[in-house]
Length: 322
Image 1 (cartoon, rainbow, N blue to C red):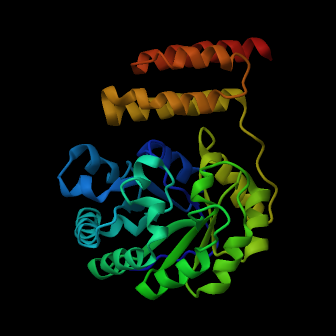
Image 2: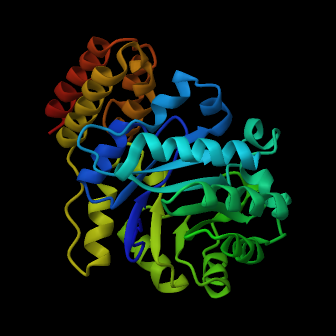
């Protein structure tokens, strides 16, 4: 199996965000591939249903990239093999998270903590590569500590371990999401390795994606926070990268309609877990007239009917504002 990363636009793995419905909507708007939320290899090894459902494809999702995190080579390898067995041809590629800066992840030695232990990171990557037939990729950051750029050397080590591609976020782990992402490190990683390089960090629109590709020579681009409540960002990026005129931004009515669809499809999949729609709803409605009041109502929603009521109110408010 192989995945061609050339000129692809990818939806990033985002914990608690890139649920199956979001992935589906982003794919419909032009994302070439979407990652699952990051999935704990430990959670999978405990046969935890709460973890296992994270790899379930959405209806109509022909392929998906699954991101695993963990620091134990044997556990990572075993669970990677299990994921491949479960998804079969629907598994586009398997990614190893070596970039998450969240304290609860790093404190256990997972995520970006692996950048502080390159031999262990390489061992994890090599074990997963040996365990599966699907391509294996790794996502990591500019470095762990501010001012200590280790990404190029780290990428070379992972390439030697057999990974098929690397994704690089242009911030140090200690930055979290503060400050600007440095695209220069992506260019330096591109010079350091022969495998495809995916550029990530501060891509908010088609112009940003074009600049990333032009300035770094990266093979693909990855969009994260800019897609929150905005699956249309992929249509914009695809148009600009193709040299075409980007589509008009969505109207208030279109944004509300998409939020409503997201809520309905999420409710159909997850039932009472519809509360996770709260963040999505706030993102869809951000900046619209009445959004501040709607945010307070959204944060009290516990059912699909509650969300429908908020969207009805916003629809009426938007109509009066015309």
